Image 1 (cartoon, rainbow, N blue to C red):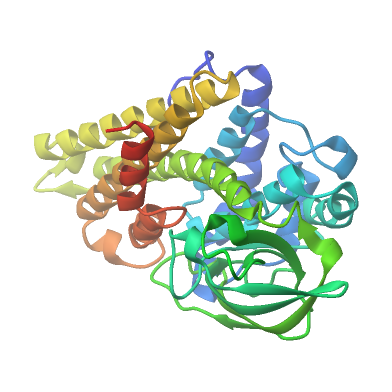
Image 2 (cartoon, rainbow, N blue to C red):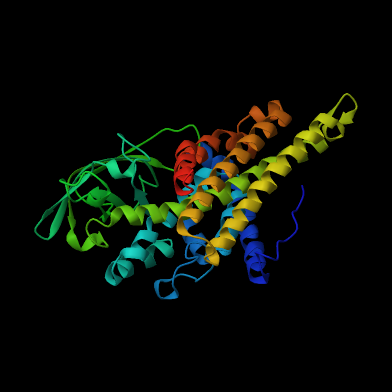
Length: 389
């Protein structure tokens, strides 16, 4: 094992104290069960409550709603320390509210916030975000799920897919088209759909990775949703969705760096213990070079992420420049994760191919990190457009 030195230019004593407490929580409450929960395809709902008790779920939310105000570096610490368990599925499921609640916080009225946010932050309810559809992923402006106004309700029809926590969510933040005449981004809105709404059905999806996270396809068949559940104004959904993506992509970048480090730690531990032809693997030059390459890529990606977080925190740079940097950070970080997961399994050999190790799990989860939140190709194209290349 190795421990990277603190980065005082980004993390102060309060951040490091939070890191220490969360590391203990992960070591005792999550890591010992990660493999079993992955095989089971879920984790206990009780874990939401336990995470809420230590302030994890409410990080960055107002105290009045049950949260704990915190800067972006606290959220990065949370992403990094949860990643030490090496279970992206658990991390995605436990943190699905972090992509479901921000639009409500940014655009929703006070009554909606008060009704939805406190029980989620207390671990009593689960929230999920529903954007992607079977007919399209990153092309959000073209989504086809409709919400037709009918008196005091909207009537929702359509489908969503690849929805994290979609099976167990009590609240769904759903992107809908409220203006059928407007086929572009201006016709989109956001609605809060409650999990027990008649006409909503859910089907689980089997996946290559993220087994511990339930992932669902949702069907809306004449779902009547109170008009009071509109999040923000009609037609303002697209901008809210895009802003939400920026935070999601930053957190995925931080997670990818931490997963890359986890793979590097696994490879280093194995290389020091495993002996072949009378010597430890770590004494072989070819293995040492692999480990250095893994460290270098991880540190390069992490430095990019930390610098980006610093710029966002201090509002340094134009919006287009920051969006481009977010896109580039996600690409670089997930590529580092891909490289480290591949090299870790190679160094572990047969042990890396057997289910149950962090590296084996993360090897299967690499692709969802490179696709989710915006594919690598979409990220590069968006960055190019923002930089006017």
